[in-house]
Image (cartoon, rainbow, N blue to C red; front, side, top):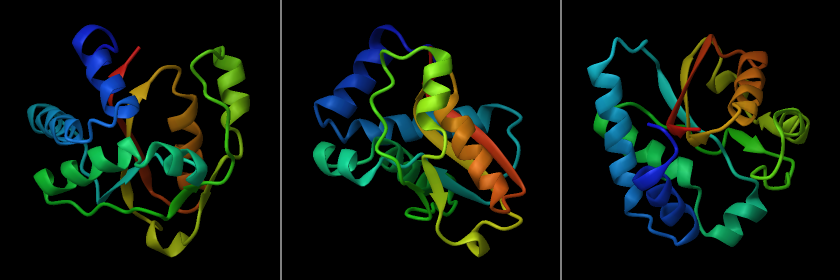
Length: 157
């Protein structure tokens, strides 16, 4: 979906007003998208992680909530805590595409390679703007042995 209008408002309310129940609806939306389209097969779902400080201040990781519901709907495993964000990056909302790429460079790490080695992974996030975050996470997952990484977001701008 396009990141505008009601979708944008719902995602903002979800992230910044703590409307965690919206995560179920976003999970269902992604589930319907996968089922309706000729979507590639995958072994497990990994959400884009937040740095622990951001997750602590927000109280939750929105992508993890979406992923958990998506996993329930599709009966697919969700892997939390193996892909971690090790760099507390500044908010990207005001950054250009090149600044975003630089900002996220080196910010992700895989804790246990053996858990993703040879796996086809669905990488889930809430919003894709330039793709800098998801592409960096994808690069790190591939570098650590993932066979294929498919990116899926609720909305894109």
